[in-house]
Amino acid sequence: MKYQIIGGDGQSYGPYSVQELQALMRDGRVAADTRAAPEGTQEWRPIRELAEFSAPASTGVPPPLPPTAPATGGGSPTPAAPAPGMATASLVCGILGLVGCGPLLGIPAIICGHKAVNRIRQSNGTLGGLGMATTGMILGYVSFVFFFIWMLLAAIAIPSFIQARNASRKNACICHLRSIDGAKQQWALDNNKDGSAASPTLSQLMTPPNNYIRTMPVCRAGGTYSVGTTIDDNPTCTIKGHSL
Image 1 (cartoon, rainbow, N blue to C red):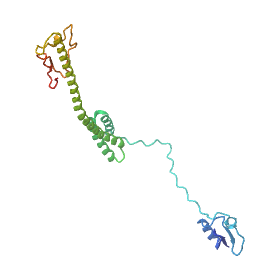
Image 2 (cartoon, rainbow, N blue to C red; image 1 turned 120 degrees about the horizontal axis):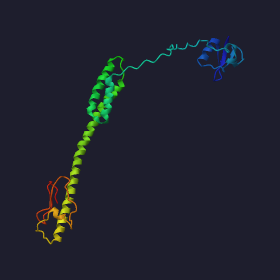
Image 3 (cartoon, rainbow, N blue to C red; image 1 turned 135 degrees about the vertical axis):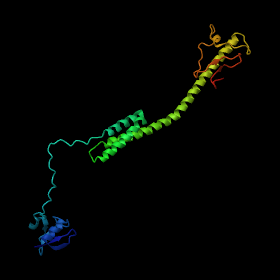
Image 4 (tube, one colour; image 1 turned 90 degrees about the vertical axis):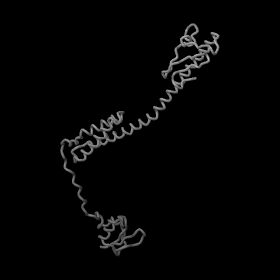
């Protein structure tokens, strides 16, 4: 038997055989609610109500499930491949080199790391620890970089520190010379001495009861002070550049 159907546009199409309609339904071109009538009649009904279409159109058997892997039982897991000792040595040396030992342990970390990586790659899977050896090797190179950065900073900072220390010592020495000169001038006033008179010694300036200088001035650069020959002479220090 053949059937006519009503399309979505309200037009009549067909006739189609049962097999043709089943093929159209499988393709999604005809729905189960599409109205159909036997050829030559006006008995329109949804296709799902027709006896020929009450059962599923497709009788294909679903594909079988993929086979599952057989259970392996409760056996112990396969142990990991051992790492060569050089891989461990490379990691330890790399960490210590990065912490502060620099090239002293950075060089062994690089050498052991390269040798361990070559042995692991040539072992065809019998040796592990590739990540450990690679990490140690990288840390060895990084320790070199940090070492040279510290050396560069030291080369910049040390001269600046020495220059600042020398300037501080010079300024402190000049302050001492001014104190000595002030004490000498006060001693000259108290003793009615003119500028051409002989200068007192440091011991005289520190002698009671006046104590023009209460503590012996000391040059932080290691110089020795001289009061001067006369009152008008400026006190001097044996370090070059430390002068009034």
